Length: 367
Image (cartoon, rainbow, N blue to C red; front, top):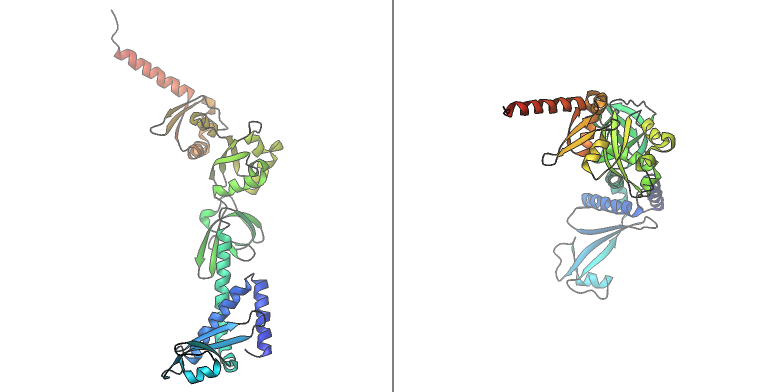
């Protein structure tokens, strides 16, 4: 390892790892030094103080043995006499520690192979740390990759330096991706596995819809339009509430875009998922009415203590307000955080009539 061929081989390896794996050169050298330290102790014994350094420019290996100057040498591996020390340094004195460089040709030949596996392991660990850090910073952001395979209902996506996984719980039920398909997904988690960091992606998260709007609507990127709330039943329907800080900018119009171009691009990305863009309101009753779009609401009565709202709609609007299998009402409740009880105008009138009749029966008539 000390000869020129070994030096050039190490340098080439350092350059290749730095270029191909995008690992900092200093981090690689530190890993190599640590591996060589362990290899030296394994081959020559750990009962001595040894310092190993790799030259940053030439990759030349330097080994120093640290010894303490003592009156009488008992442990030759860690001690030396004052007479020996004075031959190395005129300033030597008892109690001083001296570093003595030792030949490393024999060590290079013996330890190169044993150190190699440790070095490779450290390289893998360093690369995993960098990937983990990089993708941890990307939580809540969209990444684009290519589907490479399906494993146990999971979709495996090639993200470049690492693979991402879309587990069944993060998939939209109406979507199917073939090998080779390009897919956009939200980074929701970074987990450790036996094979390194595992990037968990989502196609069902409300955060994916939010990020898609942020990328498609300049007014959101500029901060003029704010996304206040998002709910989804992935693959079926979603609702997104938006608010404008500029009275001259219609938040819904900005998100929908000219002739629906902006929202349509997002609908296509989500495989024709229906998207309701509604205006946010600080008035709870108004916001609940907006949340039940596309139905028209006649009246909203609030019970703030129970966070319950009774909503009245025209008879012909009742199926639209409730939605297929209660979907529209369910999403509106999630969006607003209120329990919503939807009634038709005729049922409310009938209840009022019954209440009046009951009241009349309870009131004594005057003779």
